[in-house]
Amino acid sequence: MERKRSDIIADQIEELIFDGTFSDGERLDEVQLSARFLVSRTPIREALLRLAQSGLVEHLPRRGVFVRQPGPIELMEMFEVMAELEATCARFAAARISDAAITDLHATNARCNEAVAAGDTNRYYRENETFHGILYRESGNGFLEQECLRLQRRLQPFRRTQLRLRGRLRQSMAEHEEIVAALEAGDGSRAAEALRGHVAVQGEKFHHLMASLKTAAE
Image (cartoon, rainbow, N blue to C red; front, side, top):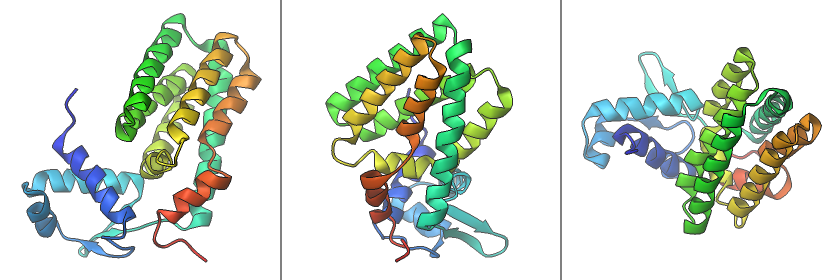
């Protein structure tokens, strides 16, 4: 499926924020961005709205849109909560998941494997979102699903960034396969632990992620 132009632009603006082209607190001007990306202001507004949903930029009334990068403590706290929410999804899903959903997870993993073989981080991340979305749905708890989707949007740029760590794609793929094996076995504790470790950013992964943020606290 062809991606929307605004989503492509949002990804490109993310890159410009992470490489320091746009610094923390900098105002993002729609006119200048339109000229940079050779588009009208409509896809720029849509891209900035998506970035605002993830919290990477902030809309201030009558002032404009500004870059906002979280500090290391805030980011670690968000990932800790995300890991626990998703672990709960896995525990619930182990008892509730349908055979059709298991099939969907295997199909998604096959597409993830193709992205790993191609070294395509962005494609892997999109398939990864599908994988996690199935798990949220199969938890059988609508409130939990919506909370996971909300925090997933908030952490989207940072989860994508940590996938660029050398060897991380293959490691993530192995974790996906362990999660599905636990779900097939109906082992809630094993599935929860596998998903918790998959989402949490600790040690090397977290240091790599923070190195991508120009405003990391000392």
